Structure formats: structure tokens, C-alpha cells
Length: 487
Image (cartoon, rainbow, N blue to C red):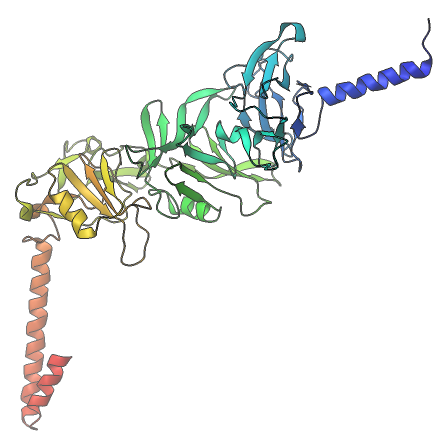
């Protein structure tokens, strides 16, 4: 039996339409009835404004056929910039991938044909939606939500909770303490393998009260770079350039009993920017005219940014592009030939006689490592001072109240912080009186100040006596001497 030609044409059109809706979709959502397939580096989902695309890709630096599901900037052509990868360590060896929503409401990624499918990756929502919907947002966030829920920002799962090597505006880095979720960046293993590398960047918490959380870059378990606690406009220890970046980028730090995180938002919506983590943290913006990413600041920026370059109880200064190590006041080098080994006290502090130990003020240094600290949110300055003096193990204290209105490097929300053990980039270290310049002991500075004051006073008296003698002739001596004293 021969089919009419119009029926053949209709069947062809319908099959093409079906193929386009299941394989080459250019919408921003996936529903349970839909299956999206590998489309050869073309986005299978595109956010409403066309900013981001979701699809399958092979890293450009490799000749392998490994395929990954990722998100990239959809409007940047010829320079594919991937910002998130789903199956980081589970590459698919061919183009047989399929993406859909399963009967439990989770987004699932398979490899292989329908009769021999293998689960590669899936979301992990514990709550099942009545009508699950996956959507790619214009901020680059891939979200799973319930389409029946009137609150469209209530997500059951989101890719922003599982960042890879890129922080986008609106993304959160830090802790959800209720869920025990730590959002942090991790580098690719190399340029052709998006699996987790050795480098991580995120907020680490001090125990048990999380009063002074810090931003750290780690290489494995070793600290590579440390920023101090949040101080109102940026984290302590960051350069002025980065502080200005955060100030102009709607930077926000949240610290409460449920969450500890930081985020930033693009104030200039026309500017495409990101924070990219590879060997360094790079603050980057897209230059449309040149079709390149421009890195305008990196951390670590120099050798003094490298954690522990100068060892304990010392500070590092860059001079002629080289790190110079100097001991803090009251300390001396452990090894005169190698200052990177750190410094030790040049005299022991007293534990039993509080009158023999004093503090000196150190400025323009980021606060020390907060691993071994104690903090209070309500202690007064004199109480903070006394508490450190009364503890033999206390090396320094910091107080978060500047009379001149300037911003302290201590964590916002704290008043008094005590440090124990060795100090890295410290303020207010404790030392014996006789070792300190500017202490209440018989220091050289104090002697110099007294000598200068005596000389000035004697000079003033001599000048007064001279004028007094001159005016005695006119009978005005008493009144003029009173003028000198009052002045």
C-alpha cells in the first residue's frame, strides 16, 4: 500500500520537530518529559537574555574525545569560557550523552543509548517537587525548583552550591552551617581535565565559635595564601586595589549563626566579570574590542603574599621586587643567615609579674593566623589587655575599636581577640619592658622625649627671663610673666 505524499511530508516534518525539541532545544528549561542530547558544543539550554548556555563540551586544550556537561558564556564566541562543570571527574567517552529529569525529580545525566544507559551524574535534592523544573538563569546558576511553587527563588538544588573554578557575580562562597555545606572554588587538575586539582579557595572557620573566619588558598593540606578576617570593606591583608574592587562590586559578607559567606554583585551590568581560580585567584573582565579576558589583579601577587615566607614572629616587606624579612619588636632571628626561619623572643616574658610585661602597638599589618585564638564580642579594651597579661601563653591581643573611626583588621562583630603561640603578621605583641621601644620602661625613646622636653622648657624659661629683664625697666614684669605661663 502506498502512502499519500502529503502524509509522508507530514511525518517528516513531525520527526524533525521532535528531534529539535529533544536534542537541539534553545529554551532555558527542562521538564520531565524532555530529553536533551549532546549537540556538538552547541548550547542545549540558553538563559532568557542569552548570557549563559548549558551544553556538552570537550576542553579546547586536549585532543581527547572526553565530553563534559558545563555552563559557559553564550555570547562570547570563539573563546569558549566554561564556568561550571557537572561531571568534573566522570568524563563521557563519546557523544551518546542524554540529560533529563527522572521520576524522583532530579536532573540526571546518562551516557550510552537508551537500552544500555549508564548514570554519570545527578543532582541530589532530597525533596521531591510536585512538578520539577530545571532552569538556567541569566546569572549562570542552574536551578531545580517546583513549578507549582509560587516562590520561583525557592530552589531544591542549584549549581551555585557546587562551584568549580569560577565565582560569578551573585554566587556565594562560604558556609551554610545548617546543612554543613561548604561552597569553595577548586582548580582544574590541568587545562584539559576539569577534575578537582590540588588547589582550593574558600572560607575556613575557627573553632568552636567561628568568630574570625578567614579566606585561604590551600595546596592540598598546606596553606598557600591567607587573607585576614573580614574588616568591613574587604578581608584583612588584601591590597588596596582589591579592597576598591570589592567596594565597587557590591561586596557583601554575611556572618551569623546559620551562614558565613561572602558574595559580590556587578554594579555595572554591561561589564562581564568573574573571579577565576587556577594557580592564582584572578580578577578578570572581558574586553569586547580585543576579544580577550583581562586579568587586572592576581593573588598571591608577590612573594610576601605566600604564607609563611618569613616564618613566625616576623613581617615581610617587598623591596626591589624581593621579600625582606624583619623580626617584630621584641624578637630576634632564629638564624641570622636565614630570616625565613622566623624569629624568637630576645627575652622571656614574665608570667607571675604583670608589671614587667607590656604591649606595643603595631599598625598596617594584617592580623595573625587565627587558628589559635580566643575572642570576645563584649570585652572592653582594658579587660582585653588584662586578660592577655594574665595568661602566660597569650602572645598578643587585638581590639576592634579605633578612636579615629578607621577600620580595624579584626573581624567585624568581635571586640577582643587573643593570640597564643607564634605570630604571623601580628599586632600588639607582648614583650618584656626592657626590650621595647616606646614602653613604660627606661627606653631610649622615652629618654629622648624627656631630654627634648627639658631643653625646650629651659629654653622657654631663659627667653622669659630675658624678656622679663627687659620689661623690668618699664614696670611690666609681673604681667608679662603671666602671659608666658598662660601661653
